[in-house]
Length: 633
Image (cartoon, rainbow, N blue to C red; front, side, top):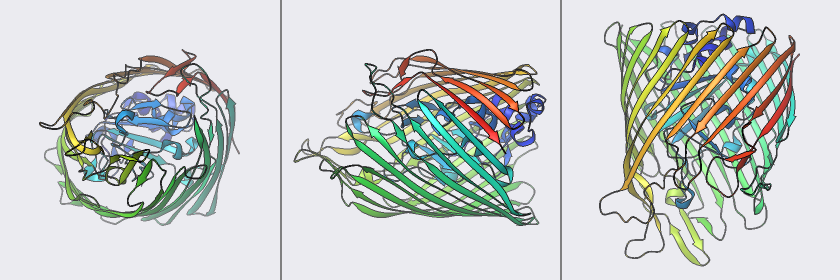
């Protein structure tokens, strides 16, 4: 799931600055051309300038993150104009690209977006979605976030259907010394401490600890929703470069938190992970990467008989990139992932069997062919073997044309699948003693995607990225009556249809100290039942998605010590269940009191006392203010 398109000038403007500039003054001097050449790696699994990446990609830079005032990954991801982000409670969010946000009526989830943190996939194999309350990265350590809308299955595999989010953190070489922050407001209190050191000239480390408390959101009546939560976390990273050709990384995190739930017992969440990666650059320029990680996640609802589960994931990936002659750049590789899980069900929700070890293996190859001095053709294929449906081919073809350094035109055709999960194949749901839902022989959901885009730099002060898509879906999950009767209901593959839309974003350097960014996202979804299929529920049960979204962002450097940022967003109506459209405003002002000390005040959802972003009885998002003090030592 790693496709790429131009980022905002904000991403452009401040992105390259994160790599080359350390002060506000230096950031002000970066041109749009320099910003458009931020390196990305999610499109081809090899580093390339953003301006050469033939896909729809937006880059959120480190400076974007700091200046937004956002402290959690979901709130940071609101900066990407090609994502739909909706808060559903104090701790949970729905995040999608190009629709399919899910629907509670059909127990449908947002499960077509692959999310990675430093190459570690964080989707849960239980239902292919992401538990956003269990994903935490210290914002200070994020180098950039590459947000790809569109399929990336050829490189990243199943579940990279509608998009890929790749969160890339800084090396410990870049985070030497101490960093601390403390802050609080009406909805959140937070503190973080980190220190990085050097063991030898080529071996560095960092360690961190962070903790927070998030207060309740509101119900529709304005009462507290009783969904407050906390999730302390700590971790470390080591980076070693024993030779000029080799680099090794070892990193890990652990967390233990709890969440209040409206009308239900509290829930405990926990997890830990460790990842190792070796990169080798040969004398001929070929690049070899070997990566392995272990990841454990668990959730328990407090009280006897309330259910729990844990998942242990073991993953190994190998890839090699090299030139073949003067016209071919190849990336080949493969991997295997094992997911061992155990579920302790409740009287109403059970799995049969309640434990499995799922194995997912793959091999892939991608060749970028230089056709002429201005045209490139990328052809790729992944063969993936998943435990429920066997071997599936996932092809991708991309063509790009760059007539000059200010214009790039690209197009793509690709195929992706959302593979079955235990929730699709093993679930048993009861209404009292009656078996209400029984999973059946669910097959992979499939997508064939057609994309095209253009990336422009019309002047030295402006950049623009526009892309359109047409997606054809088949075998989408549905709720069907049992053959020959009605109960138990089953998961079926009776839905099909298409969607199309446009994504656009751009930036303009109004003045040397003022940059404006804007984005627009249009989506039209058309789903229907396959001929002869029973239409038990509405055909749009896989997503309650807005047809229009728009963003406008302003970033100002008010002298050498003060920054002021404002972010206005519009989200259109969610059709069924109905949620009204809304307009909201976030803002942050930061004062650099000394070279090592900064004070900032941020406000979120400033236009309304509270508003709703997704269907549900709770989850009214209140207005909030947050003040923080950041220091380096």
